Image (cartoon, rainbow, N blue to C red; front, side):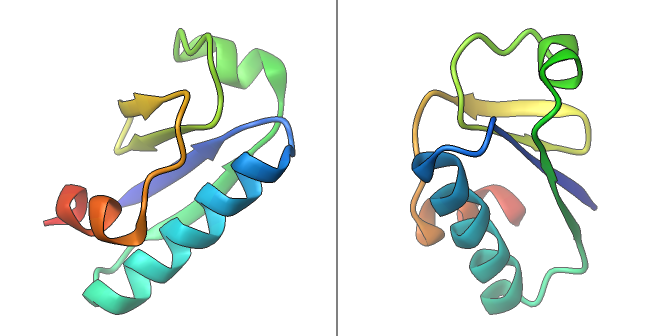
Length: 76
C-alpha cells in the first residue's frame, strides 16, 4: 500500500503525516508513507485544499486533519 500525505509543510500537514504514520503502525498495515510537498505533484491529484490523504492513487480527503482512528478506518 502506498500512502501519500499532500501538503506544503504547514502545521496541519505535519500533523496529518504524523497521524498517518501512527495509524499505519497501530493497524499493522504494510504501507509506505510519503510526504509530498511539491506543488505540481499535489496539483496532479486535483487537490485544491491541503492537507490531503492519498491511498494507492485515490484521494480519500482533502482540507482537513484526520484523526488516527479515521485513518485506520481507511486502511482496512
